[in-house]
Amino acid sequence: MSNNYKILYPIIDGQVTGGNIVCLYLIEEALNRGWEVIVNSPTDGPFCDIIRAKGVRIYHLDTSRSFYWNIAVKMAELIKSQKISLIHSHTPFAGSIITCIAGKMAGIPVINHAHVRDSLSNNSFVRTYQRLMNWWTSRTCCNVIISVSEEVKKKRSQNSAIAINFMLFIMVHL
Image (tube, rainbow, N blue to C red; front, side, top):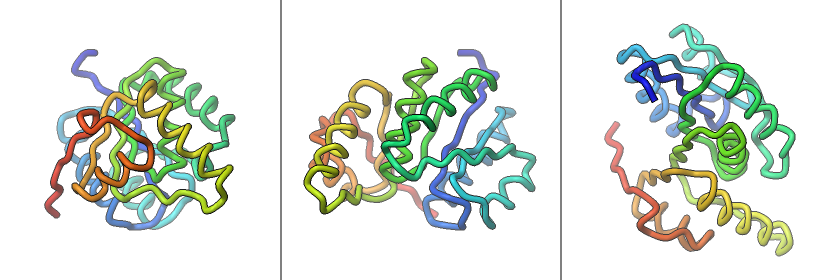
């Protein structure tokens, strides 16, 4: 990978949230370093307006459901057409599954930034699917998982049996 990085930041949604603000700091740093940034948000909103004002392109692929595999295909196509070199995902559970699959399909590294513990379904069939997808994508499609707290790291590890040494704990001071 050269120094001409092009990073895709999938975000939670178009609203101003704590996780999106953390992502904003990373986007600003990437822009300051001269790297190109693209954002995917399943919805539009005030946060997208902030990002657009910085000259960043925003796409609206719906990453709100982990079984939207067609969206993973569309995202992989976007990654290839835009020559993205890295995905740094700030999405909740479903979005992280979709972005990990898309990154694997496109053959680029994926960083998953875990802001909160995963909320799994109460339906045992769906919950089993979610755990299996999380287990599979965290091992085969994701290069690094960054957890913003020890509690999130612990819960993510319990939900998917992710090896603890696969996750980083990074304290984010706002």
